[in-house]
Image 1 (cartoon, one colour):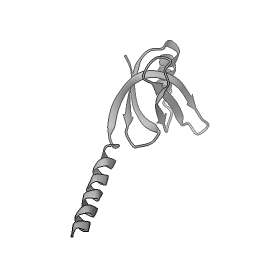
Image 2 (spheres, helix red, strand yellow):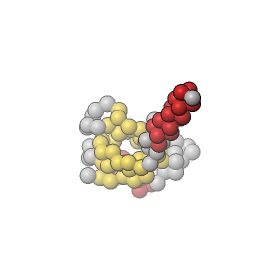
Image 3 (cartoon, helix red, strand yellow):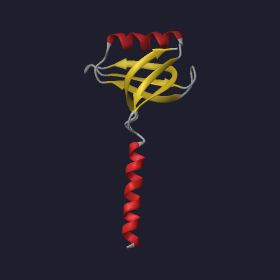
Image 4 (cartoon, helix red, strand yellow):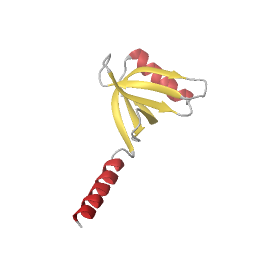
Length: 101
């Protein structure tokens, strides 16, 4: 009986912890680099401070020219941005929106 209670408790805790990675959230910082590849996928890295170390990677599965231009301008000018990302547990989170601050 005790083993069943432990198994169920562990299962519930696992499901609850996995749900913490799901959903959209916003994060502010500075764009360190942005690039695109031959498959029309764009990648980038954001830092918490200007010139700081890598903080959060992001990706766009279909490059939007306007968003790429905005990201490159923010990178070149050192302007702070807010990114809306989808928390899916990956190193490079899917990018949903970009806003200059």
